[in-house]
Amino acid sequence: MKKKADLSIVLILLAAVLMILCSRIYTEYISPQLMPEEETVENEAATEDTRARKKVQIGADHLRDNDTLYDYDETGVVCMYLTVRRGNGPENSDHSWEEINHYSAYDYDEMNVDRYKVEALLQVGDENGPKKGELGYGRTASNATVQIRGQTSTRYSQKNYKIKLDDNVGLWHDQKTIALNKHMAEGLRFRNMLGFSLLEDVPQLMSLRTNLVHLYVKDETSGSGEEALFEDYGLYTQIEQLNKRALQSHGLDKNGYLYKINFFEFFREEDIIKNLDDPDYDEDLFTDRMEIKGEKNNAKLIAMLDDVNDMSLDIETVIAKHFDRENLLYWLAFEILTGNIDTQSRNCYIYSPLNEDCWYFICWDNDDFFQFDEDEIRGNVDYAGWCRGVSNYWGNVLFSRCLKSEAFRTDLDKAIDDLRSGALSKENITKKVTKYREKVKPYVFTSPDVTYAPLTPERYDEVADALPDLVDFYYDNYLETLEAPMPFFIGVPTASGGKIHFAWDVSFDFAQQDVTYHMELSDDPYMNHVIERYDGIWPGYECEMPQGGKTYYVKVTAEDTDGNITEAFDYHVDINGNKCYGVKEFYIGTDNEIYEYERVE
Image (cartoon, rainbow, N blue to C red):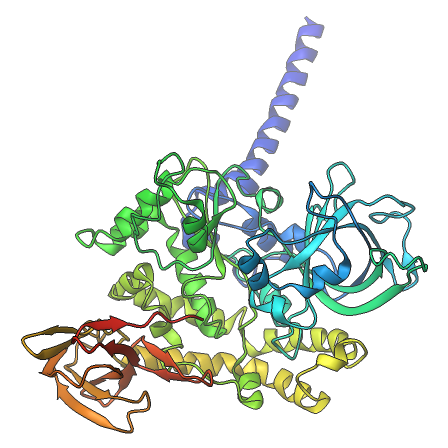
């Protein structure tokens, strides 16, 4: 009987321990995921550890990043030693380092060949050389290939590089592809890193890992017979490549759908956006729009685009079915408040888990981020008045439909206010700018980078000091664009009965004010010689056919009753590369046929 009693006591104690453990697991892990959204957001009383745990949680409705990936000193400088060698023909790596740095992306397009590569030995260390315990230490055989990366940047004197590690040679920071960026178009050389660092503070968006890299290159491809030495290539930033491995590292579905948007405004485009098993699918045309980086099946993408472009469906219904609303709101809010204008049709990724309908926006490429002051100092402010605030996204059918929803605009205001008081506050930006400037500026004004530095040291500090105030500037732009008519496209003129007919899209006004259109027809893009002029509320005009055999230009602007004016999306580029905004160019033949010019960028 005593043994049975002892056994009963043990069982009771064991049950009590299990109840305590279950209660703790429920309280700390299960319960927060079942709580309403407003109860799981960060609060002032929460500890840093609690905030991190909440952000790592991945539910069915929201994307949350893996904060533990950023537990390193991102302002520390990593030294990389790259020994480049000729490879072999079948792998397209039997080339010289001079060839790699000579040809631009446009040259390769003209030659209709893949980008040249070289073999390389990548070793990681410090300023004293490769370091024991780091990638490539003690190795003599090649472990990677190298090629240039980027598009416009491939024409610059200092190139960006893509280093791809071979199989079975190890990884660097859990990455196989290492992208090194010089950022020659911007003077601070740390904007992209700053952007991803700020994204780490936005729970609704995903960031990517970044590092500062001091690159040394030894060229063994010249065949001179002389022993090559390492040459200082200056400072680069390394941004984690978003691919299946990165998805897994960030706690997302590595088997999911992932597209890199190259130039796409979410129109259906049935002639291009097809599934891969469609006999009319053209991979090159599709890639011009976006690159497939994940699951190779476009069915889910097509289903989403069908609904986005179905005007009979309420946009809020479409958002609820296909998107994470908070991610959509915060992505747009972040890009607006940082002035990252080159994101209306490119420079982002969209991702969807394999077995969920939801699509998420992931930020990519912050080169235009906080750029206004530097552009102004360098005389580079050459963009249309609509390239700001919400009007910058009006040509994208997804975002124009979202912005027409009053509920979406109300929530966008809330997301913007949240970012302005948190991640994008002056205090947070100032703190990060101070760290990056201290580390990066000495490299910028030291050989070899000083040769190509577009700012003086004094101007450098002026631009850096102004960054924290730019959020207010971009916020004012946002408010102004909400008050103005939205931009629109001018149609190609048509001819009939000896007359020429002009038409353009209706300009949308959030305040529902009357909009007056101002049209000018001229034989020069600057409207110095106006042939016809129209002012009225109808989005079209006709007049007598002008003389044939000449080029003409039509300019249209929209004005609301408060005097806010917006140009058309169209623009003309003159022989000096200057842009005339709101202007469409066309040609009238001697037979009165009308031809539209194709603009070549």
